[in-house]
Image 1 (tube, helix red, strand yellow):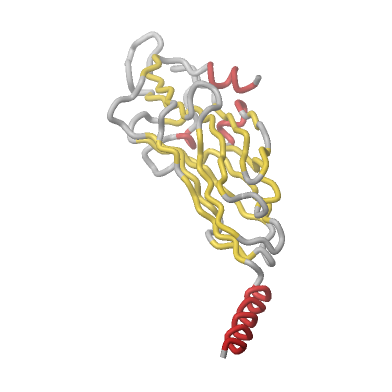
Image 2 (cartoon, one colour; image 1 turned 180 degrees about the horizontal axis):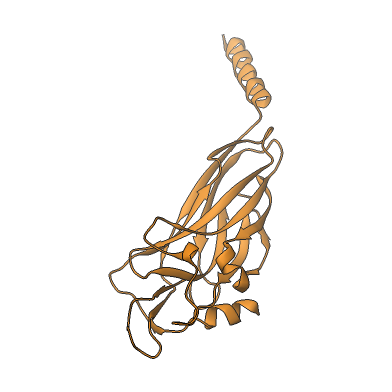
Length: 209
């Protein structure tokens, strides 16, 4: 697979980070969705860490709670341009779940440096986005969470400044245990349906009198 080439070709010394934080987070384009007027939303995934200099790869699932009957489909829309060479899309797993995405870049220090767009320290690094198609006139709360379980790591980082003069220079961090972020989206019924529910409650109240 392409991902095996791209993600395994990062040169450096692999190590486990201790007492340091790395994360994969989700940002939804909307937190409240009117299912009568909105047919799709976007979920964007970002990586961040307080160590290393660049993100070199990611492998993760998208897990949905409450998606049944609310989400028609979810599909990978794009990955960051720097990680497209290692892209692998495992597809829609139903009910708002995505079976997994792998992406990554080739880094071979000092000859092939990581892409500038993957640099840490200037805020979260864009990893990729997903298009979620919402069922018409549906309602409910959907909680998406990033998960691991794709390959041997969820996030891979490199510190290009470590081990100067070494052969090879740099230090690679392959992380299976990161902070997996989540995003909640509330899908509300059409305003007309809500008005009917309100009217029904009013009629019922009058009947009780």
